[in-house]
Length: 510
Image (cartoon, rainbow, N blue to C red; front, side, top):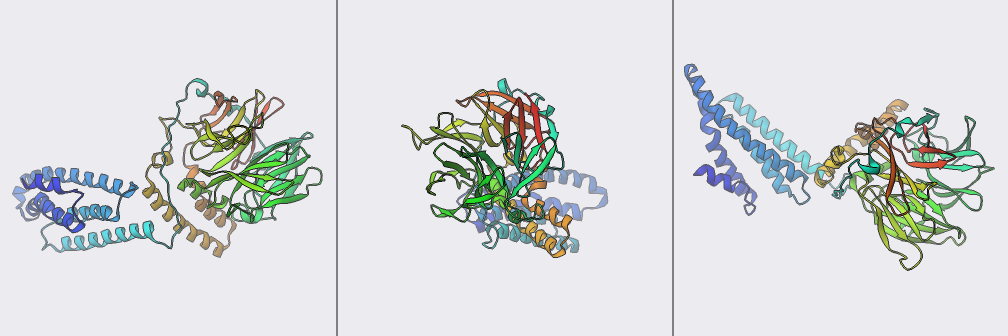
């Protein structure tokens, strides 16, 4: 009776913490007290029978501990879990181990008890500090759960993307976006430069920041991202740190037409990402977050913060207007062929949105394509009248990545995220003190999450959509030879493949 009675009470929601602790105390004394006492006090000739009986009871105890582990995991992960719930399960462990090592007169048992109490206290303090300390980075993780499509129909797996050439490998760092002008290919690099390429020759045209050490001085470097050619013959692009620029193709002269320090509806431009331009001189661009910038992109994706915006800026009047907000990492933008709507890639929700900017539906936001197999980056026109989209790393319902599995457990992610930033920030400070370039690169990439993301399997993919959001075809690289693509630019029978992180420019013959 006592076993059933206590087992039923064990996780009763109406009990306060001290009542729960008393129930555990009595419960575990009954469960293992007699067994442990027999183990320590029995004669050698009776050891076999005693240990057989003990094994049966300890097997039953292990089932209880496994249940406790499940409760601990759920308590630490669930958005509604209280500190009391977590402490309750931790004390379950403490009493379980202490009572399984009775009797109390044995010195080694007393030492074990003291050590276990100290360990439990330390772990509890560690958990409470990193979960609730006001002095650590404010990470407020939002849970999400998005379905995956299967690789069937136009998404059927192939190795077409894996056939792409990798141009200028080890020379071009992070060629994010691509524009063609008068026979030259222009691209934006991680060291802040805009370069032009022709006949295997790379020429630096402009630099948004100053010469710097990549990546730990990226704020000093600047980071040009999405680029477009305007009807006025200028190159327009977003810099993640400095704002919107216009560049003269011939001279390379830069004009910071909309600095990131400008406040738009109460927020500065925290993370300008991609843009497109209409015939009236309106620049439509994404500001990926109002909280995180490029240097903290790991936390932006980790937190799933819905602070992204779509902004319109008029070149002639200088006026700005927020067209949409509360988006989860909006990135690539593309005006529709008729100019009445804007397509926007929303990375963290793995979907593409359509925002109407003219006509009867003006201001309406609807889904263009969703449940995509990876996070969409930039979106550009295709020769068929549709759109090409570059993606990070593809997966389907049978092979989700580790971040996908933990997306529904915000407290667990918050706990890890605060540990991550605390210890790796210390490492970055140490690397600055030592002032060794290799060490500083290593520490900064650890903090930014580069090495963590590189541990996950890569499956490259690009997708062509029609004008209604239906998938026309997809090219894959299942072995990850070509992956993490930011942009697909179709030109003269080739697809040119940009990337935020790859040390090369991809090219695939159609």
